[in-house]
Length: 198
Image (cartoon, rainbow, N blue to C red):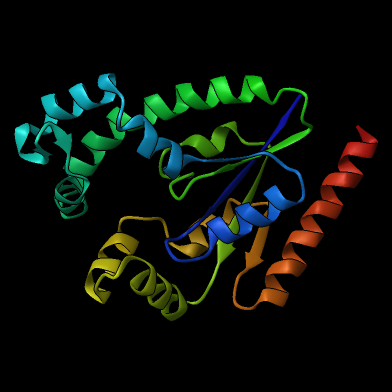
């Protein structure tokens, strides 16, 4: 039975970097954000978004993600509505993906909102990636060419580090390359031992 390892962390903590490291070690990785973006191009999801948010979030028949983001990040009710459309689609897609990887002993399920969405309940182990707030803010500003205010707004919509860490099996400190590698090596070692004993 394939074990699901949930990988989470606040925005700018470096989840994707960690996910890529695990992928480099041969562990299949499902990145929910990437898959959600793909699913948001499908007819069934687009028609639900149109029904919920109207034509304003579309331009020339295409979804304007910027406009949609503007709405949902400034209004928790709208964010919930969008999540109620996208999460079930991601859940279904992940189920399918999991079937394709049923021969793998472990897979990584990466999600920024692992706890908020309730997906953590499906995981056998959980990894939380942490980094100091100022480092996270700087990373997101550099990456998304956004403002400090907008980053803080998004952070406010997520569980804080303490809440996530208290429900996680492993914490990876992503402050330096050394700290990050140390955390990954420790987890890989644990998984190997677990596999040998199963």
